[in-house]
Length: 89
Image: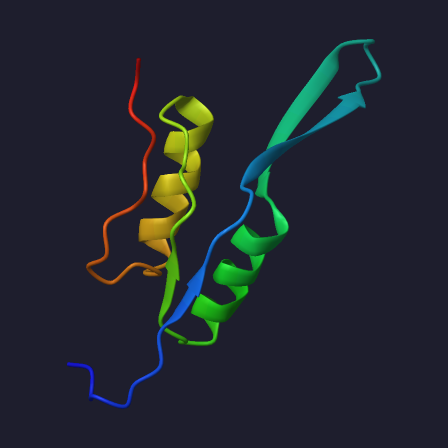
């Protein structure tokens, strides 16, 4: 339970997926998708330091957005706060 003087950091800003392509010896291309965006990464780093953080920027509802949101909840960043998700059209 939070005390009245507890600090909660709220962050907003871009979240994105970096795609890194690597050529394999057989000529095939492998792509690796990593979660990123500076404010998103700051929220991850702060949560690893047990700082209560809210990331309030909208997260897409596509497969990449699902990965971002799942990473949020696994890391325990939201502690009861709702993720800000964009609605599907």
